[in-house]
Length: 268
Length: 234
Image (cartoon, rainbow over all chains, first blue to last red; front, side, top):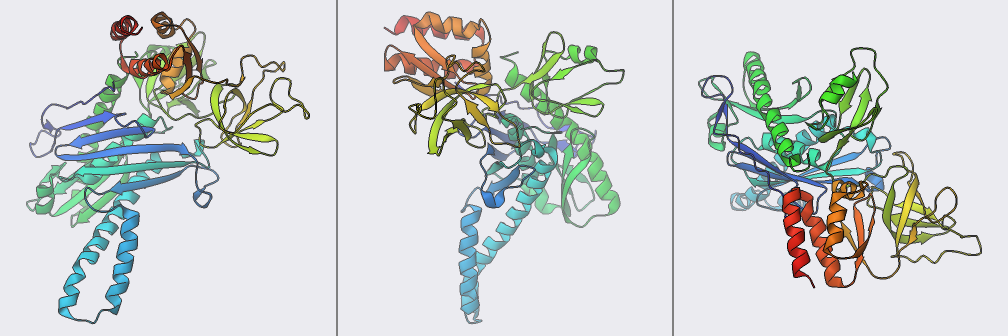
């Protein structure tokens, strides 16, 4: 008999009075998996991510840090092999490629490993963004010489994946009960060719845009903890996007509070 | 200062919430989930804010992973014997050590009969983030006082840490209601492990399911379920 707390916040919300600056419906559920120490699923429109946290647990001697916890983040793609297996595979395929003659027909076959490599690099970059944000929010010195592992399973990707990963990670860390200095949330902004800012874009909107930026905002002072950008934009546009993200983050933090309050409502 | 804390008692707080001590602070004891950070108190876990007279405050949260704390009684599983200590799994981030001399009446000649795989009910005498946790199976007077190796039979299960604390509250309503369903023995470790022993395996399994189920039930729902179970089990 597990408690379900799926809070779906209305329809699209207006952040800035302008209709483009709106967030898709978002929802969250905590403690939905039985094996991990903490888990959550976060849904933003059609983008959905499932997160599980294990820890503080025993750590391998090679990864042990004497004064704080070791955090590992793995993002599992929706389809395809987990990251570690891919490395082995692409490694061997690249080796083969080197021995191939520079012949057009055979080069075509190399398309798949190169594509794999590319998606792997993207994934690693995403993992690093999430890991560094979590490390900044967690008080990891309180659990030295232990390991924390965060596994993010992409259920469906319809744009703003990194921000959804960040939100799922924050809810899962909170569910685990790990000591945190502040909360964080992820907001993605896209700038379309006309120069309008679209918050929480869908995959189609991301594709049509000139630039996509994701920010992690902390709950204490609404400062930017992490930024990941793609495309070209002016300094002014960057600052506008940060301001918009900060305003959008209010919605997320209020949602976090409502969601946790609902979770504890039965034991109040 | 204590006014602004008292206002929030019973509310759900999130990590990052801050109480600032503007005026000259009174003495306040911060329990789990609260940290002093210069002139303010920082909340670092999500949960319900609790208060105990006169000045104790803490965050009551539902988590699954145990972090050892000094003085807490836990149920451990003996996983290895190395020299004169046993290594005990308590569900924390590392194994705890338990000396063979830390049992009632144990001497260098008279070793306690503990095998790998046994369950022990023990208490932490050393538990901090920088040292290996250490358990003992006797109190400061050298008496077992209920601690030691478990006998045969019984069923061990894992529940959330929040539920364990609810079971251990003096005069717990939950335990009183469970007692009425059918007679059983229960040992509750603060690490989320609960050992039960009843007449039959069926009763033990029913108890396990009830405990797991009542984690997220309101008092009325619990009454209804317990009554139904008491009527249907022979």
